[in-house]
Image 1 (cartoon, rainbow, N blue to C red):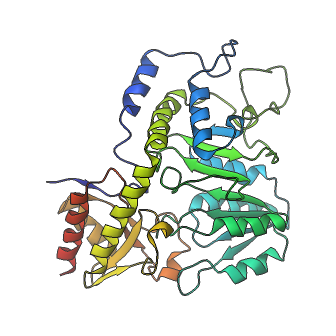
Image 2: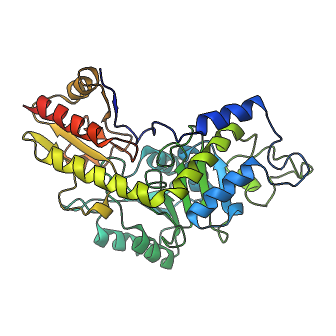
Image 3: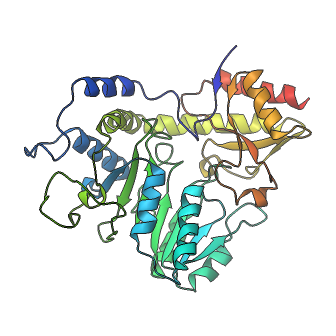
Length: 378
């Protein structure tokens, strides 16, 4: 049976060519860990950090390597050192990697949380966001693009207003880095988090937290750094301040390869993904009995390659099973770890079917997937 991979919003596949081979070579011929050989020479972690920094147009020393976006979001949210009564503004489109750390702080500390809802046209409610800003929030957390609908959020003007109100701004760029330009300074973000295994098409177990030089996060984890071992506390210097313990060096060696590829082919990647997304949306929207969640009035530069839908008269699990077992289409069904948005989409209690192609997806696979859905919906 033909195999079609449309689950890149979860894990990118295939990885960039050379990633696996580079990781295997490193593990067979290990070199010294970054900053721990005493030589001060640039090494593999330094090169990866520099390449990620060039992609974001920031300084390498503000790039923190962690185990994933979940780790990064927890480190950012906890590092802000919220206090009882502090207000955090976020949205109903967020992933549980934002919602759950905030919920824990609400339970443990009495932090207040304001959730920006969606309007009837599926946009974040700008008026209510402005009302929340009048309450002097300490932190504003937004995703760059939602992982259910793929809609890109207006983070730049919102973050500008948030910073004017005295808030720290945290951007969850898990679905956008590697797909569209993400430049923290242009977006007025103080903190940016993303994984290496989605849009960057690198290895699992890699995540990045960028911290603006003027922001000082309290370390959520402390431990070995390989230098200044005489200190009782974590060193103040970045990125060691937030990088306790042994790094996942083989994975970041692989990530360097994927970042280099993305940087060298970025314009073509963006053009290809926009074309495939429009092709998928047009094809599914023409099928009777298929409901697409969001996208009718979106321009090609307002969304990333994520599309959610349901087939009328078919249980969600049944649709997902049929797509996989009968047509070989690897996709995802459910709430996609973003439970709050489904109240606004009308897709409760079980969620949506989600297709997420990438620039590596052949056009023939998109045609095949559209035809499969058409046959199921008949």
